[in-house]
Image (cartoon, rainbow, N blue to C red; front, side, top):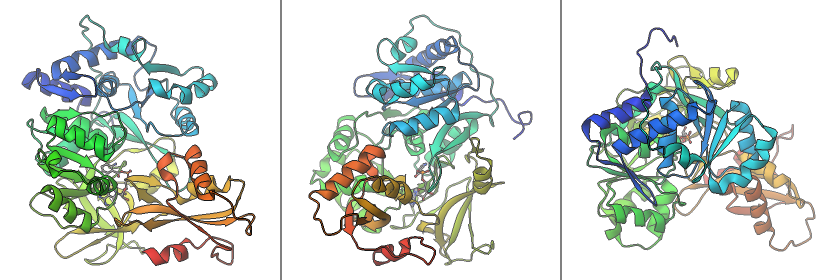
Length: 509
Ligand code: 3UK
């Protein structure tokens, strides 16, 4: 990745400037409280960029953003990139210990947080005294953004292959990995996926139930609409059938982005299909969309769901169904600009109808993980990026998901490591041993199930399931809790004492 061979390009400048020329008065974002036009956004980004540079934060410094989805988010994200400072978008629902890890791993110079997260960050900040904390309230962030005068703040003259921002990606073992993305990738995903597969135009009203801190949400709700001058609705609330359908109806949303669990919840909520009549397309990613959910949603709403697979490492969707070619239950074909290959255990290319590991070559791959050379080498193999997924391709070139190659599960579109749930369960005083495996719910979606050996086997422990659930929720991101418990006398193990999870899983696959 040589700096001297590539064009000058600043992604924030590009995304803003193309709209300033074309449609400055168009509404760019709407949140729970306000609206902002492209022209206002441009000026606020410059004002924020000016203020942040005067806070002792320099080019290539990292700044963590841990904020709910609202209008400040794009201002901060783009303002940092505009200045050559590197935003790291992180999940607002993590436990404090993960925030501490990310602040220390990235040596972030500042964290910008929503007001309600202050209690989680304050204790960490006293241990990391050099890290500035900026709170999204009237005194903090808003005063940095709402400068009235006009600053002549030039964008940082970056190269297209320079790191623009990071996201954290998690694996089955070890700590989350800072995933470094380049300036050019933001526009590559818009050009290749959003314009070609979704046919996005400036007439679209986009709404992503997946938040901006996910790679999926960042494309759906920020870069895709901005790439064409569309309008994006940002919702701070948790996505429930009620909150999501209210937004779709209120703003006549045309492009709706969800995860399979949310489509299942919407279908189970007994709502009127009228609420969804403005939609022209719905999109699903994060985990496989079962064929029956596709059919039910189509029957209910009359709108297609395009299922596509993306990853934090590839930034967005690289294999997808298309409007003219949908195979329910499959992920579809490689998106324009991306190549896929399936590699067998012996390192050879798989033939059609053989299950093997999926690798992707495309213009939006991350360059590496931060400070993890071995893991970077394993995942980013020259032009090819490993996904950790098993896939099968049929003779029509259609790819179907066959499960993870590692121990990870995707639950509600997000990674869960069985080991971290087991470790959390094992810290409960009544638990002797725990094994966690993937299990399918009535909608055919994967959720964690725990097999537990209790310390006092004969004793009937009242409300033990609820106690274990609360215990897990206190330590991990809450959605990772087991949905089912089975109390057993022993766990299947190898001669060397390793739990044979496949034996616990086998009845459900
Ligand atoms: C799994 C899918 C089957 C698969 C993501 C859209 O999910 C995203 O990123 P993550 O890093 O997870 C990546 C892994 O999730 N997966 C995602 N989509 C599908 N499996 N069918 C699907 N449609 O295991 C993949 O390797 O959290 C999704 C856009 C950007 C993203 N980052």
